[in-house]
Image (cartoon, rainbow, N blue to C red; front, side, top):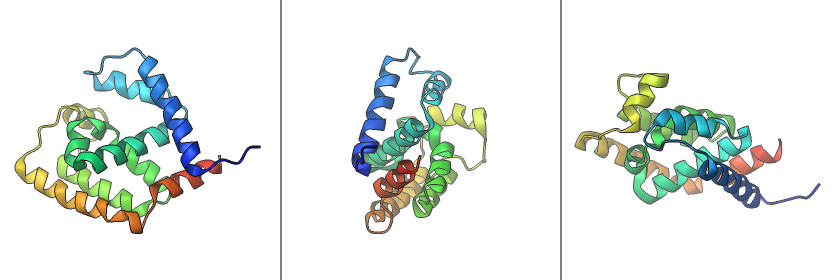
Length: 155
């Protein structure tokens, strides 16, 4: 079997997931349809999709962008994947951001309903910014590409 780098593996899985989601027919204004389209991906594609989207949005615009771009509907799954691949510090940061936007501790559909079109307060934005700073400092401690790639290589 061909040996490929973690970056190549992640890139291939993300491209496949992205292509399937682009071809899927769903209402982007409906979190449930979008969520179900993502659930139709393979486990590996799902893992890569949610982690890449987390990293892209938080790197580009912080957790504020992550939640305002509605990717927060996947926060519980992202935390699960991060724990699965042993990215414990990143998981803690995402968990802390989730507490900021969901202080009531809503679950499942109730959570997704409120988070899909969340309007963040200035206080929440400030609290999320502190998580952005922690996330930005991860590169020397926890490499998501290595952790995710090594995990997926074991499939």
